Image (cartoon, rainbow, N blue to C red; front, side, top):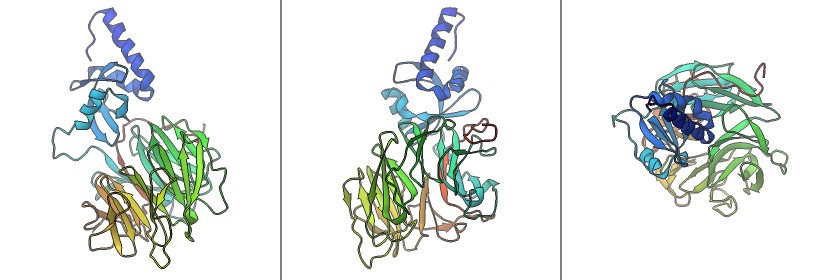
Length: 403
């Protein structure tokens, strides 16, 4: 955006930027500097305020735009006008053969973190200790507003975060238990803990406890989450399911029968449906956590140990190999080889492993075939995320030294 010499025009432009700030508080300092971007396009927000920026990448319901400082800033596409939302959704890289902007972030026990551009060559390895069940466990990762954020812990809700993939801040959410889920709803990031505490943040730094599982039974624990339809579903030990709604403040319980093992259920969301994998043939599906299909255990049936959604269909790892389904109800066999017990999906790549979790397989064709993922340092993997590091100093987290 080029300002004229007119003082009135300058005041008008800055007034527009100030109104834009009210809607995009977290990116205003960076967007302000985008006024001189050479290859920018004029975008309009939902309130009619115009601003110039350059699209870098689009991932799901998030868009990343580049500022004149060379920093990437990520926010919800829904914050733009309807016309510009269409522009963003239709956007493609100038070089259609170019690799999608972003990196893979793999995390695991021992504080293991590593980064890759292609899911094959890994770098920026960082670790705290040999893998063990302790507070160095890292369970889940997500990219949010230009930050890689990782959750874990053993006796606390440990959270670490970075804006460049090199320098990480290390903190903990006060009063929390180990973090096993990250989900974004309406531009808010929620962290779900094993004991059912739910924390929320809009900037990755200021976290607030917004809900808890008041009806938690002994032995229950959340081991994975997924979000959609305005809900977060957390699943975990002995068939326990948490249905989290109303901006994290309402936490309800549901139990899938016949689940006799700890840490045996997983959940994924796609095509408007949640799918929960579990023991005794369980591949249960629900849209709202209240009405379920295939929720009755089948005696003698094998266990489904992992489930993921690859952007088109669900994949489930079971006793006979990999199954696929577009709706979570009708399943067909996928591929001839058997993946590991755990499944994760990030940017067109399916990851799978059993024990040890350093022996990871990857698939770029929806599980039709698999190849070993190079992992020369034999880092343990528990989750993989894909996104953009926006650049800048590491976030200031609660529980950090000096905080």
